[in-house]
Each structure stands twice: as C-alpha cells, then as structure tokens.
Image (cartoon, rainbow over all chains, first blue to last red; front, side, top):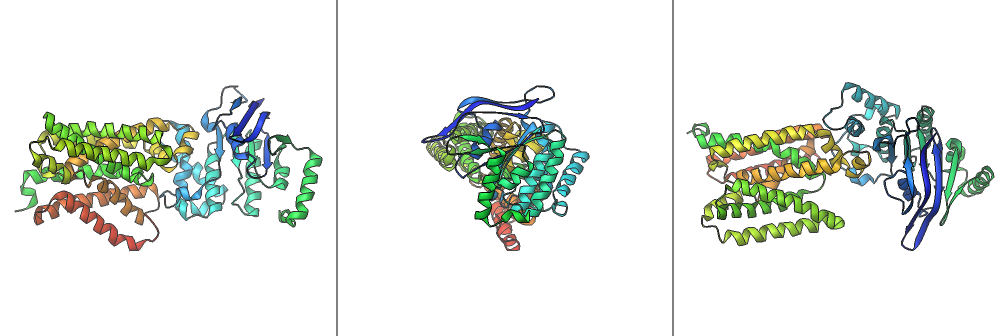
Amino acid sequence: MNILVADKISYAYPGKILFTDFSLSVSQNEWIGIIGNNGTGKTTLLKVLAQLIKAQQGKVSLFDPESGLTLKPYERVYVGQHEFSQHEAFPATALEVVIGAFTPILGLFKRPQKKHVLAAKAILSDMGLGDEIHTQLSALSGGQRQRVFIAKALLMKPKLLLLDEPSSALDAQFTLKLFSILKRYQAQGMAIIMITHDLALAKTVSDRIFCLGESDILLLEEPQIEEELAHRHTHMGGVHEHL
Amino acid sequence: MSIFNYEFMNRALWVGALVAVMSPLIGQTIVLKRMSMVGDAIAHTTLAGVAIGLILNIDPLISAMVAALIGVFLVDVLRQRLPYYADVAIAILMSLGIGLAGTLSSFVRDTNRFSAFLFGSIVAISETEVIMITGVVIIVVIVYFIFYKEIFAMTFDETMAQHSGVNVKLVNAIFMIMLGITLSIAAKTVGSLILSSLMILPVATAMQLSKSYKSTLVIAFLFSLFFMLGGLFISFYAGVKPGGAVVLLAVGTYLMILPLRKGRV
C-alpha cells in the first residue's frame, strides 16, 4: 500500500527548471534516498513531497497505508536543515522542545501528562542526550540540537518522515547510531525520504536512491551507484572507510 | 502615614499587581518573537483611542481598548503585506498612532486627563475600572494557560508549529487580542509611553537567570511584581509619577543583573 503518490510534479524557479513531470510512489516501510549537487532543488523537492509547498504542476497525495485516509499533518514530519541562529538565546530546554511534539497530537485544551514527559525523556536518552534534557537548547552544539529536532520528530511517531541532511552536523559514530534507530522505526511501519550528500550511507539504508540533475530526477541503478562511489572514493580520499 | 491607609493606594497596588501578573505572559512571546516594537506601536494607538474617548465622552479605557484591537489588526495586515519588512509595518502604525493622538489631543478640553495616560494614572482609578480590569486580567490569564502549549509552539518556531498541524492562525489571533487588551489596561495604569517596557523588562531580566521557558515565565512574574509594587511605593513616598518610578526601577535592576550573564538579551 502506498503512503505517498506524486503525480507528474513540476517545479521551476525563474530561469531554472528543477524538475518536470516527476512521478513517484512510496510504499509503507520504504526508505528513499535523494542525492544531488547544491542548487539542484533537493530541499524544494522534499518540501513538495511533504506538502509544505505546492508543486507548480501535478499533485502530491499522502495516505495512511492502513486506512487509506489522508495523512494528518503530524503523521508526516519534515525535519529541515535548521538555521541554528533562529533559536539562539531562546529560553527552552531540550525537554521542553521535544515535549512540543505532542502539541498537535493532543490538540487544543489537553495538556501533556506524565507518560508524555517520560516518553520525551526516553527518546532524548535514545538520542544520546540523557544528560542534556534540562540543558538550554542554545547551549547545545549544532549536532546535539539536530538530535533534539530528530528526537522531537520521532516522538510524533510519524508514518512518513522526511529528513533534509539529517547527518550534516552529526559525527560519524552517532550517524550510525541514528540510522540504526531509524531502521527500528522503519521496521515498525515508518517510511523515510532522506536527502543526503553521503551516497555510501544512502546506499546502505535506502531501498531506492534518486539523483537530482540539472533539470531532471534519475533513479540510480546499482551499477551507477557503484561507479559513482568508486569515482568519489578516489576524489574524497576514502572518507567512508571510517564508517 | 502608611501607604495602606489610603484607599486609592490600596486600589493602585491591587491593579498594579494584576497588570504585573498579566504583562510577562504576553511579554515573553513579544520578546522572544522579537516583536518588542509592536508593543510600542500599539501603545501609541491606545493613546489615539484615549483622545477619541475623551472627545466623545466615553470611558477612555474602553476607547483605548478598541483602538488597541484595531492597532493589533492593522499590524497583522501590514505584516502580511510586507512580510520581509515587518519593522516598516510597525513604524507605519506607530506613526499613525502618534499622528492621530497628537492631532486629536488638540480637541481634548481636559488636557490633564489626556496626559495622565502618557505616564499612567494608576492612583486615579475608579471602582468600576477596578472591577473591569480585574475581570479582564482573570480572563486573559485563564486563556493564556489554556493555550500555553500552543503559544509556546508558536513562539518557539511558528513555521515548524504550522507544519505539524498546530492551528497557528487561531492561536496568533487569540494572542494578538490578549496583547491589545493588556496594552490598553497597562496604558491606564503605567502610561502609554512606558507600558511596553513593563512587558519587556521583567522577561529580559528573567532571561538572564533562567534557561527554561517555564522558569523564565515564573521569574519574570516575580520581577514584574517587584518592579510594579516597588515602583508604586517609591512613587508614593518620593512623590513622583508611578510610571516613571516603575520603569526606572526595572531598568536599574536589569542593568544590575546584566553582568551576571554575558551574551544574552
């Protein structure tokens, strides 16, 4: 059963076509990787797929794979690349931010209960932030803040999770841990669409990988991935050997 | 004579405490959303409302409240029209408020009553006004706590809140109405010229000492009460205007606490 159906979507900025007539169906439990150079429109594509911005042509539909109903906003969670300056000096602890996950789920007039607080603490521990739950967000490092926002996203138990460069501020060790956590959620029925610059990583977790080119989107086949990786390997001096 | 022997001072202390409780609720979001100037702009429209009230012989507190709500609405419309220049929208509204207040004040016969709103007239509050202010403050405080988690979400990150399905439009509308009401009541008590500082200073001071949203709010409450009641005491015994005393006490405290924590608001 599909959770996402994109039907011939197109998007262009003045003077630049990002993608035209792109169609995609994502099934429950599927993990999609998106790669591409800067400026090819990866983030725009992800936002269109998340229904945060409208495709200029075509249509994106999101369904609950079990009931067939349209997904509620908090059932598809988008974790963008955070502009960390935005929350500079904001007086809120990691725990306060993460508990915010329940705000749309509980709806108006209901307050988070003890079980919600416990769940928030548990997920922060899972993300290696057990000692930082009462730390002010802006006192955390960039990588730690990114983990806070991913923790918040996972706490919503989304059916579709869209991640824009989730590992960009994370060290290699925690990236592996994060991906094993994500795998666990995926096994429970969560679909993931993820932008990454790390093709090797994308290959290990993704069921399918799409590459954004100058004005089109290609599904990468196995040989292409291998070739690309071999090519990058010689250029990047074996960064991935550490992984 | 003790301050408590005077009925008007008892009344002033009660209303002062009410305003002090209400201001940080609104002030925290105003400070954190970097909307401090909005408070000032709407404060000036309340002054235009006061002038209209005095000309038309309506209770100036009510006309100030209506003017504040119109001001709040205009700020929102202008901000949507000029999304990247929100400060311009605010400056336009402020100019409108000052212009109207200045022009209309020429038609006010009792200029003392008008200038009372510049620096507040907390010691000249009628019994009906006390009842009205008490009622309004209770409502604002209850509404705030009903929408506490939504207001936090909106304050922390409006876009993120909207994306996850929080009804940001509704919460924003409710918040802006509460802002207008708070400002018009504060105009009556501490005066239009300094009421925005009453919303901002307790929060700015609390932020020096606190790292969570909730504790910032609690500490801001305490500072707000201290500034307001302390200012009223100073004003009574030193024979100066209450608004001025309140704000100078607040700024003085803020500056004393500032060296304790560096690199904050």
